[in-house]
Image 1 (cartoon, rainbow, N blue to C red):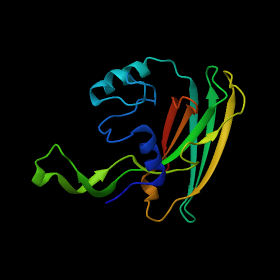
Image 2 (cartoon, rainbow, N blue to C red):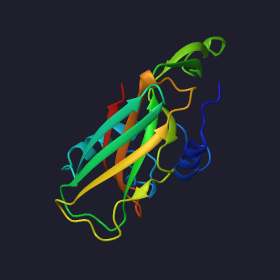
Image 3 (spheres, one colour):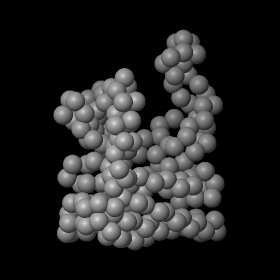
Image 4 (cartoon, one colour):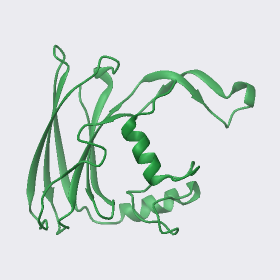
Length: 187
């Protein structure tokens, strides 16, 4: 089953040039290779280093979903806890849990690597406000600045609305570094 999306492909092409899997990103911070990619062996230490940093932004997401119309309204309240740049953006993603489908597991013997009923979690479905998000301000953002972003989206029929979550993250558009992320289950 092909679960790729246009937005997901754009991210993959930007962050993973060539055949760069199983590398990963950690808050889209630069790694030792002067780009964003961390080998699997470096994930734990990179995550630990990020967890030691103070929070830069507070995010609160209020999702409102109408099952009759399948309209999802996401209200995101943002408060900066420290000064930031003039290139502050918010990205909103829709992800889905409990998607059952084929999955390869190369850790298994080759005759068993295809799993027909694998349950996928946190599957990226789409960006709600464009692949790179939208700007919060055209001026430098100072500590205690607050923003409210509202997004409306009609959930397509092929997505099970009972299993969706909204992801909001704030990032510096120039460096691509993620400042903060929040996830909320819709139902």
